[in-house]
Length: 233
Length: 233
DNA sequence: AGAATCAACTTGTCTATACAAGATGCTTAA
DNA sequence: TTAAGCATCTTGTATAGACAAGTTGATTCT
Image (cartoon, rainbow over all chains, first blue to last red; front, side, top):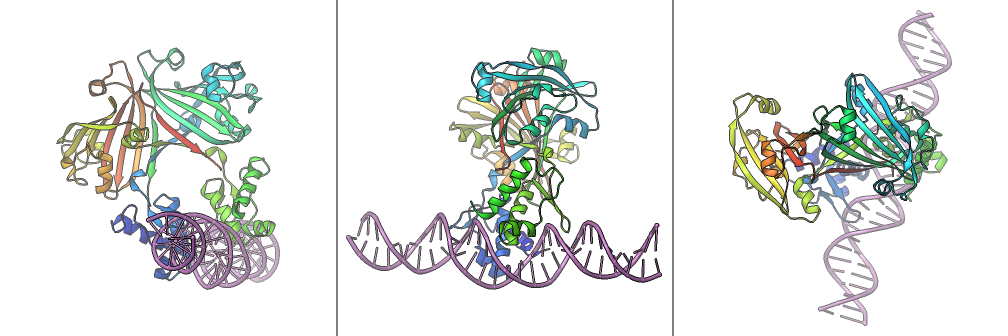
């Protein structure tokens, strides 16, 4: 094990053993360097990497402290539905139900941060796993950032994948909620009005602004979002 | 902007501009150092940080390549319900409905990886935002890893926070699904049988094994899971 | 042709040093 | 007492050099 890894391990032991509590200052770069007989840059690397992992918190000029452990918020992975289905070794297929342009309603205009009445592109696609409709994707696209959107074949490439190529995404925001199936969902996901659905709202940004807003609706009895997180090694 | 940040920006421009495609080798540390008239360590830092961000992929001895862009999966943050409510400047309160021990059913035994019939601890707590019940928390605890669980005051500390102190968590797994309200949810979340609920399953590990399994049920019309992700700066 | 070797290149670790920049507490002057 | 200034600590950036370790391709030998 390399020297900086030994120092990292030493610090983690102290924290996990309770010797260094949350908020306590850990030894400075120079102190660690002297204690382990290494150069400052090597000690620094240990502190740096632990800070990137969220174990420590550093502020220039002041000290390096043990970060608050309870704020280790967990993360949930959101995957591309096509990849997810294929990863499970099932057949993935998409059916394009609608593809066209329309005037932005007030709700959509607010989401895409454009004016009410501006023309936007719209797509309604159902994603299937074998013979089960697993996701209904309603998407509203800013035509300024994806002018050729309507000419694409979305049975071959998902809208998300296409948009990533023409407008590299820089930010994404998600919301997840549980709703009862609306008309569209009942019709295309083959479920009743008394079915719970998992709905994801996804807004994506590129350098030039908001690219699209998507509503992804899953039948609640057939789909789960999953995530796994490993903390300190 | 510091030198290594300039180099990072330069590389990102080349990639986003399409000059360097996925899988292409980017200039070596020495080449970059010469081109920008900096030391190798400075050029190295730029490549290193981009690799950590997942933009580049490096292998010792061989080259540094542009990583596959489409695998940038998004992440959704899962926060502590108490923190979340307090962060919104609302009053947080917890009501302990049940707290005790019982024999593990087959389902719970499988989740906690213990034997059927072993005694486990159990808690049922409702988390309130002001006068609205926002989360019903059913939790099954491995008593070997938290022997004093039943003596805690969960109106002051959430079970999750307490468990983190007695058994530092190393891993967590989440599943999110949409379900219709069951009897418990109807009763304690004050909703009808035809209400959609967002349900989180959370399993947490510490060094010694599985600590607990929790079912967190939210009323679908009052709660959304949210997440925001920023990619390359 | 196939295998072993080697040189050249890459990334990974580490050192010793220098200066910049932010934080903190003490001293001094008003 | 208050405020300004300063010394001294911290972390942040950058340099130039060294050696280790892994990859690749060309050369050489069998």
